Length: 205
Ligand SMILES: C[S@@+](CC[C@H](N)C(=O)[O-])C[C@H]1O[C@@H](n2cnc3c(N)ncnc32)[C@H](O)[C@@H]1O
View (tube, helix red, strand yellow):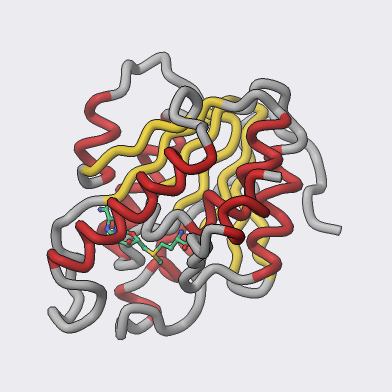
């Protein structure tokens, strides 16, 4: 019902996230009552819109983070300019207002490092979607920080685990971050799954 309203208002804009990511994000959210959800990389709120019905059904609390700064190790023409970034933020804000979910969704306009610094050490999430800067350096920081705040039964979904992203080769991109991680993980197409310490489920079907 929320997604339908977003589409009716021509506000649905998904960038670079595949249908299977959406399918599994919804599946992950549906495993947790009062789901504590974090997304890094809001953009136009496309992935958020794609899971908003599941989130609202699960009485979720939602943090979504994007920022106006530069991608690490990436050529300057990759990604939007400052004006484009501000436009994305305004776009997502208007989605939240249009569907009336501002009590559940908090939008942050800061880099993910700064966002994690704001969090209390005890703050935990059930589902974290990492879809921000896909450089090795930043995605590694995002994964390390996410692991500190992942519930032991939680799950992380990482997007774009492919050989080339942001014009970066596999040694400079999120591919390497995922490859180096030595806990329980699974790869489905370009989507990386990382399980919380006590999470014994087999998530992929
Ligand atoms: C691939 S897009 C996200 C797409 C979105 N999840 C969707 O499905 O439509 C990546 C976003 O991450 C943001 N980003 C890049 N570096 C970031 C960082 N360090 N912290 C937070 N967001 C970041 C970019 O500004 C961009 O909007």
